[in-house]
Image (cartoon, rainbow over all chains, first blue to last red):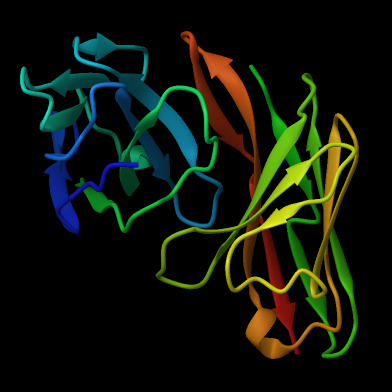
Length: 111
Length: 117
């Protein structure tokens, strides 16, 4: 699986959009970008995934650059409950199902 | 949606005793489950892959005789920490794969916090 780089921490004001960047410059053509988050003392939660097109679901939007070397997870209207560690993971869509977590970005939503 | 249930959520035990943690897929069948461990302020570390009806596959450095994994049915995997010691105190999390939007994703349990005195 390709390596990812994320900032260790970020703050965002409540109600504003939270934009979390991820660099994955060594991504392969068959690898997808996945995002998970972990709220304190809970199990991780799947958020969204994508290959090259921008994706949106009820939780977030995922913007992937044209060269696929980086992506941004967008939480459009952050709430206090979005405070969590966010993990960007790059991997093939099927195959080795193991998921390797890096250190992620600790997002703090400020009232 | 697919739900993974873990039990117990918290357990405290004495050093030298064994502790069993259960992981159940509530509304789907899981041929494969994954067990992770997380120490305070650290990321999740994969311990082992649990396969229904066969032996678990352990990650390098994880003692298979200490962390016994049993996956006897398509909805239940158990992790037994044998002869637990204080250094085994950790947050243990299981997960199973489900298909979302044409891709395999992992759905996680809420975790089990083990404290060994």
